[in-house]
Image 1 (cartoon, rainbow, N blue to C red):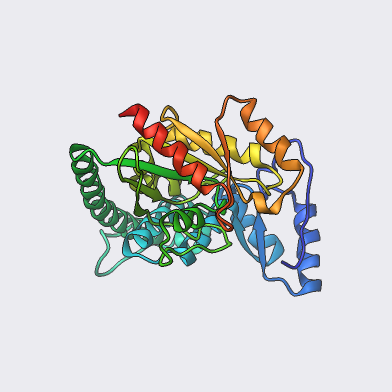
Image 2: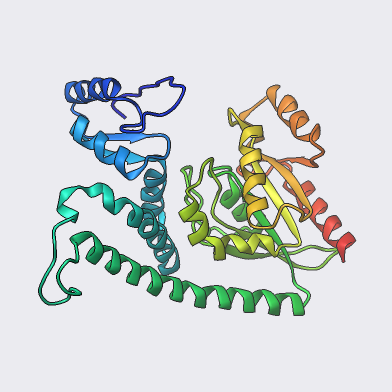
Length: 327
């Protein structure tokens, strides 16, 4: 990152979001450091984005588009790639009008619908056809997931889902609990975009399944939430949720509120849960205050380190007790 600027305004500028003066200031700064990309940590309208690019001479990304680009880089499986593409297309279609005069030229010839059709209309139809194709493909995935859930419930197999803010250590926790080294766990945002499910043995309640899915983040673009709904719904069908919180985070309670809001959106906020305070190997005295903050909200907190495996036996014991009670 070449630099960072913070601006205080009562309301965003309707034309450029940050105002023309600030835009020119950023243009000059970018030229002095050789930067070619301006990232705005908020949502921009198509007009604001277009005007900012014209004023600064820079490529401009807003928060939603930046998160989508991260998702694109992390997507590995065909399903994840389709979900990200669907979100990006739904984001781009309303933005076409902000592309300028080149999208307003009249079209003609093969493939158009007669005189008067603009480049904007042709391109929009092309994207909308692709959206319908992807939605149909993902609908099949959703049906298969629902079939698996029904079969699992019929067989009496319990499901524990790991949820939480991105980069909280969910994948590392799943790998440590299942001793499965094939599970990818990396110290970066959104390293997991696909549901990973493994079996965990429980002496009292019998074996259960534990799943890990995409992490949450503040102001997650609604297009991504909608596109990944089939993946997120895995958590809404769980018997128990483990809300994994990073004890070393600067804002653990604020991140927890983001997680709760997302759980409400997918209808999973009433499912029994534990707060798993992870990465306790990275903190000392302040851990007591973090844990007290969760407990003051009525949350049941279990302290662990997925990396060093501290507290994991107690976590498994508590999970087994909870599943045994609900059975």
